[in-house]
Amino acid sequence: MTRPNILLISTDQQRWDALGASGNPHITTPHLDRLAAQGARFTNCYVQSSVCAPSRASLMTSRYLHNHGVWANGVDINPDEQLFTRALTDAGYDCGLVGKFHLGAAQHHRVEPRVDDGFRVFRWSHDPYVRSEANHYHTWLEKTFPGVLDDAMARGGAAAIDTLPTEQHYSRWIGEETIEYLTTGREKDKPFCFVVNFFDPHHGFGSPPEYRGRYDAQALPGPIHSDLSTKPAIYSEASKKSYAGASRGFAEHTDSEIQDIIAHYYAMVTLVDDEVGRILDTLEAEGLAEDTIVIFTSDHGEMLGDHQMLLKGPMMFDCSVRVPLLVRWPSRIQPETVRDELVEWIDLAPTLLAAAGVDAMPRQQGRDLAPLWRTEDAGEAYRDSNEGSGSAADTSAWEDRNWVLSEYRNSCWPYDPPVHTTMLRQGDWKIVVHHGPPSTARAREGELYDLANDPHEQVNLWNAPEADGTRLELERMLLDVLVATEDRSQRRLSEF
Image (cartoon, rainbow, N blue to C red):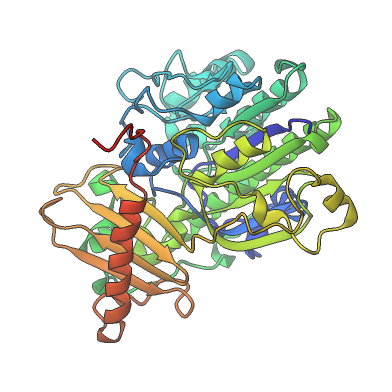
């Protein structure tokens, strides 16, 4: 079997429903919709944390938060952790990255410490704003558009950079660097794995005028409302002030400002979509499309005004921890495949390693998703292409987990007292435990949602007498899942 190329594209803070293919008629994403139509769309992909660094560490290691140790932004990953890109490089792949990585602290030294990540090409920028000699976006901007960076920083810093014209924008830089790698920058005698990490649609909520102009803010649907008095107290706090008081809260915005934020968010996604379109066109032009697995996903979501909150934090609503997942692999995945099983971000690394014919990482905890796209109704060409790599109808290799786990450990701007939440979704039920003593001085609270009848998570059944049995069952299940996902990879040599 010819080893496939791998193109892993991730955005930052893109909710699952910020995509036309997910059923959102108000957002313009024709290229991502095309990608979905040409492969598989997973409708229930959950990340392992609602915050960047912990989630990204789970992607790269295929391990849960409580095992890889990157419990918060600003925590360096243990150098002993194995990343799937290192495994691919050891197996003969040419690996590269452009954009954000975020497996270590970058605030004070303005550079993220490198680990044994396997990347030959590392065009890093933690974000588009912080001045640093290591910020490749700034280097490109100063070289390509002299004076623009200094002018933007003088005019308004982050807000001015967010609204730069498209040709100077950081999303365009990501696209340019990816295209350069695909055309001239890769080692052409090797299969490649290139990781494309866009910054958008992360806040600040700004976008180039030509993209913002595509959306009528007042014509877009407003946020999903919740009665916060029925939910844990931290949400009322987060509604007033985001990021533990470091940013403006939902309550400090007018309705018009919230609609403008939604419009900018959609505009950022559309800009990313256009860059993805340019990248996909380059794959075609270079004759690489048929031999390349393309994955599109995001590290976590965005509240976007839903439940009277903005940004991210301890929230475990679907808009915060459920993300897009599109996978295209021509001749291997039948077009327009849609899978509704519960899958996790830790499943991506095992899937890519298996596709590349590379041994699993010893401590990985995710599973290969391939059995889910081997369907009974696949066409002859699809079935023929899968000969030797498992039956086209072989979904027996996929043991339906029927649950997903996400963890938050005071991971973003820190709260005082700390906030720790753990989410388990099992089937159509979701439980979120807001931990109390001894983990924190906060009171123990929680959330319980019947997603089949309450898909927007507006009715909290945590204290509802009629849901007592379900809550008890899910709390017990969460304890069992935490034990089941402990790291017991250390080899036992004998009975004593």
